[in-house]
Image (cartoon, rainbow, N blue to C red):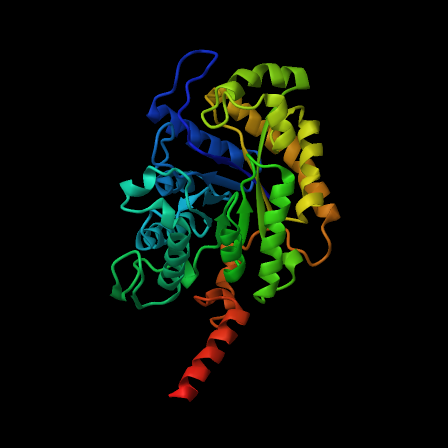
Length: 386
């Protein structure tokens, strides 16, 4: 199973010191966290994308390319790439470049973004969020999988004779996750293409998360990608750890209370009941997260948010150390002990995908064999009627 950390890249003043990092310092810290994650044996580092304060991570591939040059093993991804406000052509170029820079240690997570004012900054309408996500992602798949692309759609100018440069590494598109917390249409989209589904459930109760994952698994199987138990699932998480539960809560409380997203809302105690946030000892985090698979089934990736709300750099580095040395080894062992034979442990690697034959489902623009069969039948009916 893959374990890692993700950052949303908020620039939040430390509420206990009444000071804030500069933008440069915050970006430097994020890079340090990625290097620390590899050092302690984590599998994945994920970088968010935001275009509005208090967030400063508008170009995740820039940071990830720097990290790729300084690391050897850790897989790099986004959390998320905005498929709605970004041009699919630029996404295709950026991530093909990042594949080459990182020697294939990259996948990406697609998301719509839920900040209304950002959409018009990029000439888009948030009311078209779902149609944008559907059309843009289909175009992205074509660009990655076809050498010469001719395409017309609703939301951008047509493409005629377009060829991506550079082509994806080994002519193999990066693996894609579709991230969503509330939209069944996005779970459906992930299932249609046989991609991964990531429910970043840091604001949601486990019952809601389980419902979304269940929908994705059922539709994944219906579209002909295999048994629903083998659908590729990832979850978000959040923790703050100390030697005792009291020490953890006493230290973390002012940061929780002033966090840019949920601060000044529910109490920390209520929030930890409703969401995966766990503030306590490493043993409490282990116990809490071992229960996730009981709700959603055996899954492949677990990412933790550790660096938000103005937490000092040295504290975040210590949290990553605890996660990598005390928590993840136990979780990894226990999750694999309970995993049924035949259910995969990890998301597909670049090497695995590159070894697929040219006619493999993954290499098709529409990867669902059920959907392709339906298209062929419809085309045959139209031909007969002419």
